[in-house]
Length: 172
Image (tube, rainbow, N blue to C red; front, side, top):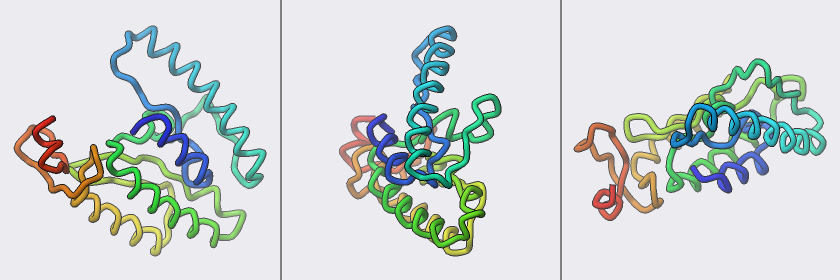
């Protein structure tokens, strides 16, 4: 997912994406990756602190112990699912806000990725309603092209299963 989409998700759904960081770029050398991680950690904390000033109930982020995969890798899927993830995030954030204030910190996205051609959305904690919302979105993702957002289907012809439309299947 591109940087602007991840920033938009974190801005609009601070409870759910409180640990989201910049996406990992695999083309860098080890030193460049370390420098990028250091710089992004600084930027992430600055942006997170801006969110925290706005939403007082967000917990402090501990950089020395990144317990969340989303903090390390970002959202690991194509931009075609952005609208689906955005809608799911809106619904989940609404459910989180229904919880008692002291319990809201437990509900955070841990990992958002593609697996076996479908969306996988993992949280630290969830209610029955949240789980059903996540299941619906994961099922819907198997009919949406991961790259462009058009109607697609799971393609198993490659080593890696992907949900693609006919046009994107030819490209990739």
